[in-house]
Image 1 (tube, rainbow, N blue to C red):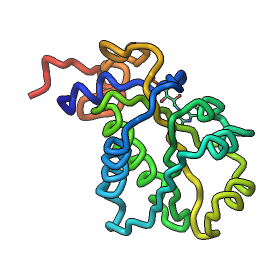
Image 2 (cartoon, helix red, strand yellow):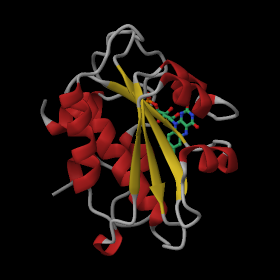
Image 3 (cartoon, rainbow, N blue to C red):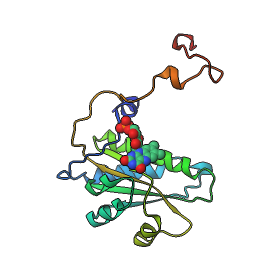
Image 4 (spheres, rainbow, N blue to C red):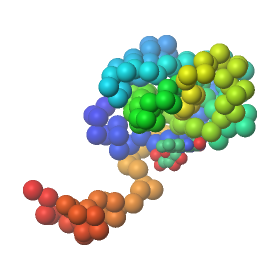
Length: 174
Ligand SMILES: Cc1cc2nc3c(=O)[nH]c(=O)nc-3n(C[C@H](O)[C@H](O)[C@H](O)COP(=O)(O)O)c2cc1C
């Protein structure tokens, strides 16, 4: 898949086809994408937990803002070091990379950030110096995803030329 097509066609899926397993090779590509993502100062402070166990996925769903995780084929928990000012940017970059890597193989995904941190920390053995910052769930989407993203503001509303507040005119771009 062309990178631009991957970016513009990927959606955050909520409904996963529980009857289809994502092949091991694809999971390993997703983890490789996480590994090679650039981090601030190349600190690579992040750690990733691959969660395949159904009971563990169910547990992640409890009290979270991602109840759909229970129906995913697997998840990747992204742990980052909150003492680094840019750790959320790093988490975001890794998130987007794993999602795009998955989508390259037709695997859908979605993320959430609100979870029962203390309980999850104990259950998954997460050390105090790392936060479970993002959980990304993966699986094949129930509905076929085609076409471009729809629910997005137009370019003219979110982009300015040279100065904030200026009207954006694409024909003026050099
Ligand atoms: C920082 C961030 C936090 C998010 N948190 C949640 C969440 O807690 N639960 C959830 O179901 N989706 C979450 N999402 C997914 C967004 O709702 C989704 O990206 C947005 O609605 C656009 O979806 P679309 O690409 O399918 O149009 C989050 C996305 C981002 C970027």
